Length: 161
Ligand SMILES: [Fe+2]
Ligand SMILES: [Fe+2]
Image (cartoon, rainbow, N blue to C red; front, side):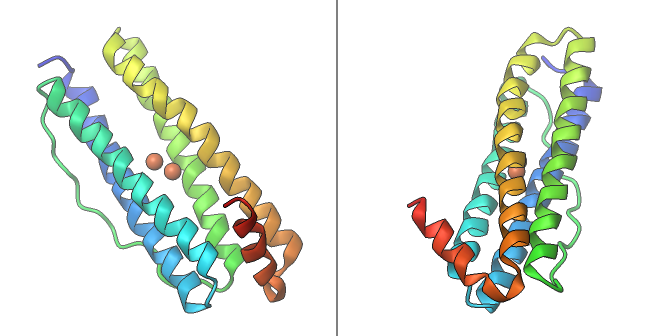
């Protein structure tokens, strides 16, 4: 086994968080579908897929280092939102939390002189900068546009295509 039991356990917990994020983003996408905001829905369905890919990166890594994959119980994601702003703020909060956890994993890898894990986690450190920044932008845009003009967010998101 090329990974310590502590780091292995922490990686399994991270798999749980990535999967919960994936489920949470399906719930947020569905909330937007319910409001006929297709571009926002699309964006979150895509984010959901990315979160699943993140979980799979940890799964593959654990298998590569002969660790043990133990997927934890995944809590139900939040399904009801008062507003679009509440939904995107939840996503931003989630990305901030994940960033904090990735940093903790990195600190653990450094402390244990696990250079392979360090290099593996580097990708996530960079990815989280992008994820937080995307959600921060979205929160700002939704705040500026307001709940009644979300259709403008749809137009904005179409521009990037
Ligand atoms: Fe992620
Ligand atoms: Fe993310």
